Image (cartoon, rainbow, N blue to C red; front, side):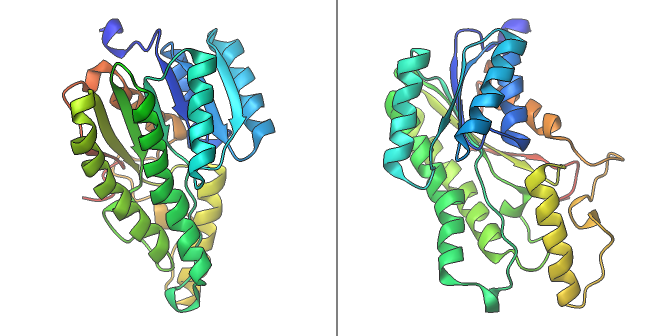
Length: 262
């Protein structure tokens, strides 16, 4: 069993890795033995997080700046993973944004930016990873329960982009299977990270503007297990998807939602 979940000797990239879900995912991958390249727009925070995990788990961990919306930036980060880690076996597309703006008030540029990060960023990451996975590998896309439902007002761009990411996960699985690359999605519900707390507050404001009453934070906490999830709960599912425990799985998106979407 320990061999099935071990990532010893494997090289992983995580986007949006400086804090929140990305850092929690990086920590579980490092604990399982993977060496890491941790990507974030905030290079200093990524470097600090990488140094922390390298010290804690005795792996190689490097923090770098990259913009997932720019193909050249993603390609350069993938090259750096190969150069500094010696190869590439796992890529986790975690970076995402979730502004809350009603459709009638949404600037065109905001719609484009959400899709650039949440959908195009997944494509760029998967494409550049696949080019460098010489012996097969695993790509894990962190999606959202928003890929399956609309939880609250003001999230048209986010919900649409996450539906796109679910479809992209399926298509990537088909295209990359001949290369020995598995592609899985993980769809979390609300977990308390810096970004999600801000999104929950924005959702409450949008609901109030629409005349809908919601208890604080409950808008994103419809758990059947008696508590909301934590970043580490989601990181464990990503670890499963990236490991040999999920060897027979590709193209699926795993709901890590405490029953929210039932």
